[in-house]
Length: 147
Image 1 (tube, rainbow, N blue to C red):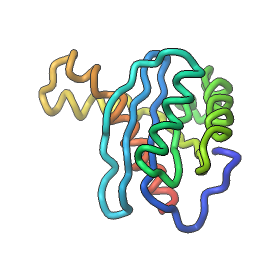
Image 2 (cartoon, rainbow, N blue to C red):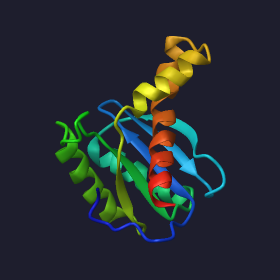
Image 3 (cartoon, one colour):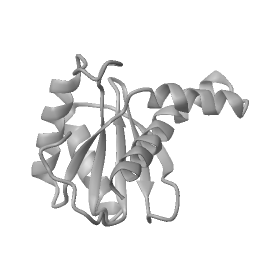
């Protein structure tokens, strides 16, 4: 999905990002043996600040790669934000020394919301955490396909 090829052996840790219009969900996959874990949700500020912050997280967590959710339509065609997300990914790639890959994110937010509903979390609690869990689900899909 991304211009950057995925190597035969993926190195860890990996940073996962679910970027919406208002927030960025952040997750981390530390090893191939442990499930990716949601870390936090970051309120977006400006494109430049968001890019800088993503690059800082990659350094902070000593990541070997970054996986960003790609918002495809249900039929697999590019969604309205695909061009924006590809541009964001290209700009982030210029700021970091690790590969940045795109991963189909269809229904990850819906799945994350369902998981939280099943756990009995109130709407406010779900909203604060749903993007981070969606980022973990994006990482999980990436690893299922490439690890």
